[in-house]
Amino acid sequence: MKFLDEYRDPALARELLAELRRTATHPWQIMEVCGGQTHTLVRQGIDELLPVGIRMIHGPGCPVCVTPLETLDRAMAIAARPGVILTSFGDMLRVPGTTTDLLDLRARGADVRVIYSPMDAVRTAEENPGREVVFLAVGFETTAPANAMTVLHAARLGLRNFSLLVSHVLVPPAMTALLDDPDCEVEAFLAAGHVCAVMGWTEYEPIAARYEVPVVVTGFEPLDLLEGILMAVTQLEEGRHDVENQYARAVHRTGNTTAQDVLARVFRITDRAWRGIGTLPASGLELAPEYAAFDAARRFDVSGLHSVEDPDCIAGDILTGARLPTDCRAYGTRCTPRTPLGAPMVSSEGTCAAFHAAGRTRSART
Image (tube, rainbow, N blue to C red; front, side, top):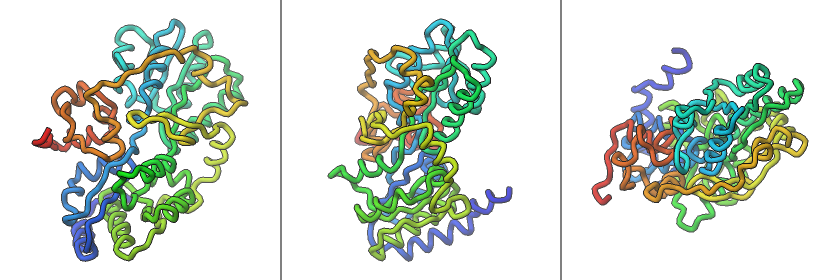
């Protein structure tokens, strides 16, 4: 398939690996921010083929995984109310809350519907004027513009029965929080190509300069990742800390300014809780005051919930790269894709799910 097969060429992959071996003279630790990149690295075994000393640290770039437990519990509390239709992408339905998940709630009678576009939620509200329709709006900068457009469209239609439960998070503050941790081992980043397709990479330039870490905007195919790793290692070996763009076929420095304008119109930056990590300052988006009527968190009184993580789940350590899934005592036993304790095992971009699908086994010490 054009623009796909050529980025999976095994001969070119071997050449890039050989070039990496020639280039790397020191051990280096590189974090890929995106969960989609993690899945490619693990599924293809790239992380195990890298030269000795080059270690990939799997970052918090899974939007489902970082959605806080409180948001899921609020979504379920709203969905359980009479007259409510809760809409969501399918990957959120099996993410565990404190006591249950949306799929189980639907089996018990709640009207929880899987949609494929946020505009489907608006159409559902149009078709059901006597019911409240709520869309669970999660994700990074990648999905936020489309969700912002649903608000503008609903406002134009004058819909009074449509709202968003917003849990959008931003990548640069998470990178900064990781680098501020005194135990941080990250020496370079592979930035998520799809986020940068929206936002560009100017936000990463101050991070690279302040912390003296290379940042390479990288795609998601095997050759993208190998080239991105090579570019990062080359910078590290040369003592540089620039922002470079491996994903030139999709990303420009300034990003998609139309999408950015929509985000600035509909959302405001706010402090945001990240599952397993805690609240990070200025790391999320919330609806601007002029669109507060579409805020499900304000429309429904669900602020008094008490959310509790499973004590055996180490999702926070997984999401920050401090530990691997195979370090978890519940991995592959109590926690499997069918019986997940935390989001990283059930999400299609979760690190635990990637390791489990690839047949990675638990560490002997656990």
